[in-house]
Image (cartoon, rainbow, N blue to C red; front, side, top):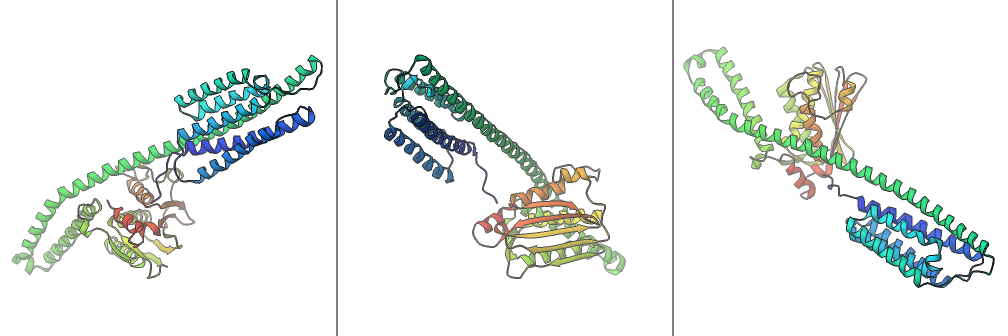
Length: 435
């Protein structure tokens, strides 16, 4: 069974932060070169280069952290953004302080914090950025600007302000777009989880109903069995072959009902001693098909088993019932012919069931596996395939439905890791299928 998904929003936000930091590093390098070469304004290259190396090192560490499987916390994001604010403050302190037009990059940091961080940490970072602004208005290294007329100086400031605006606007658009994508992905993930939870709740309620019905049926079935045994010893039944044959058929059908009830109880975990058992995949599917064929008596069944004898697996009543549901639906649609094949890809068992019926309607294919979606127009229609899809999904597998040239085709992909008799995770999981 797949490992449950965790909320990856903070991890994705960290990825966005890493990308923006790379852009900031490149932007700072370009700006420093432009200021020193084009405008002939000297800058403390050693100190500013050290800050750039620090940002690069921070990004390398962040990328390593992003690769780990642990969740990224709000505190980690807050700390990384705090370092970004500190690096920006140092760079501005080395290049004119509050008179530097790039002072407004603090607003970009505040905007990032408002979206990425929790409320309290966003306000704290905003206060720190504000304190950095106040600090830079009184403590900074003045720029050694070449002597020129005031209009030239103003033009230089406007050029710097425009570059700052373009950089900030571009980063905000990029950042906002990526964050919106993350939020949409998160909403889709949560919607899928809610849908899965609702379907599993539906299965639990049906399982409880089936288990309760099995308990209630146990007593009358036992009573009928005792009565039939008494009748079988009575003279009218022993001396009349026709009555004896009908009595034997009644006993056979009663035994089948008792096996069904026992299977329900085993699947619900109430007869675990007789529940799952170890077998081989080839034997499991051979016995399953033989049992179904004996009880349903289809006119024609083409069965192909391409599995090897050495592939071990866990046999579980719930899995068997799921496959029976697929067979029953195919038989109902195509009473004259049914095709069943099973093979292994090395990673999963692939069971394919074909019929010669009319095939699935388009709306059924689009909502395949949803409860009460059926063309049979009877109470409870569609629940069989609903259970098939959900039980296979709990195993970590999938179900594919399509229309072939002569009818419908349903394929079950069952992962070996969930069904193999390994004695480890696979075996434990297999034993939980019917629970």
